[in-house]
Length: 226
Image (tube, rainbow, N blue to C red):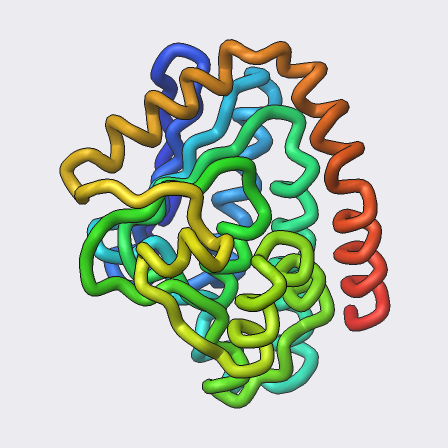
């Protein structure tokens, strides 16, 4: 089985690259390897930079499980995704995502779980397409979207499965900035290093206060459903 996640350090930034050679589907292997990399970053008190593969950050949960795995398997995978979102929301150090391209479903929920998100210019799709593919949005996804998207984009995104361009994803609240593809890694690393200069204890304490109600809603929704 090929490794999906790689880990490297640049000063106090842990660069975690996600690349399954395809669409970066969120599978149990994906989640296990990503959580192990986050464990390492946490043990090193490093700022985290999550990077996708060229043209794709993540297309969301593994469709082979979602369509053919049965209710128990689907619940197990989606529940593990919910726990990842809660972990990212409350992570002890800043987390930045370099959204390298298409970012859908659980990939987009990861955008809503971190501290800074940079996307790339191009014909890329960003959004929550769960309803379009026949899935009722999990409670944790509803609460993430409610907490991080603009009020106008919230209903359009969650209920209507509207998909955004990188530029309109900034307006909606999925992204904080968009740059050219060749500028992405430089911009993301610059922001991650800037965040690494903060007082990380103060950052974490403040983040927990800012997101207190959101974290509670995500955790309660997860407990209700899974």
